[in-house]
Length: 183
Ligand code: PRP
Image (spheres, helix red, strand yellow):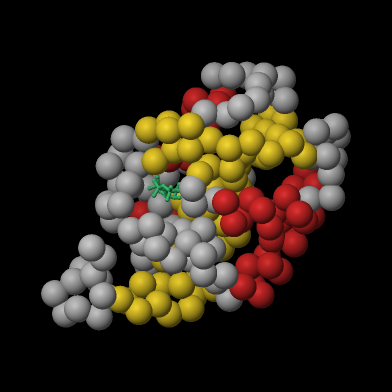
């Protein structure tokens, strides 16, 4: 069971929407020569972000999903990334944008990028809504980042704490209210 906690707003829904609009403009212009962009959401955390991002991308896109997990219900990365669901489509020779909700240690994105590169896409770029550079344990860096954040435990906009709070429309910081709980 999760420890008792409250949530403080860190990034508002309005700020997220404005940032996504700007990121979508950059992506459109970067992929201006692409006839179709394959946008790959990493489940489960990216499901809200990818939904908003593709609706701002005024270009031909195909949406696919890959499920990777390294945390389960735990707060610490297991450092072992498991692919629980693979892509439906082929990406060989295609232009691909991998969409991640948050890059923390970087193990998940690093693993997925390595895996997808073995399938020989024409071009593979990555976008993460949130980046916690202070927690990085790999060399991976997303091509585009929405917000750099401090080492806070965040939830909302797709991100969970023990599978809760993915449906918050904003990004919030978890504050444990039990004095014995980790902060
Ligand atoms: C979370 C999050 C990222 C990853 C980031 O996924 O959605 O994919 O961890 O952490 P990392 O940079 O340390 O690898 P999780 O494994 O919790 O699965 P979920 O997306 O289904 O919540």
